[in-house]
Amino acid sequence: MARTTRAVSDKGLGLGLLFGLLAIGGALGMLAAPGGLVGAWGFAAAMVAGMILIVAVHAYA
Image (cartoon, one colour):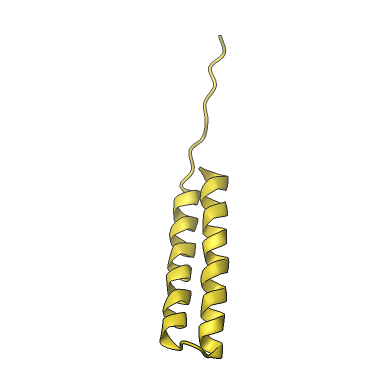
């Protein structure tokens, strides 16, 4: 029987941490200025970074 190997990469972990930190930063921006334009952009940044985090973790896992 032929042996098969799979390369393991840490890209999912690194990208997950990066976009997790960006999402936390966006959430902090949202909390810093509730009801304002900065809060809206913070919410948008947190949502986009969170979505990319999930995709990166699933794509490289």
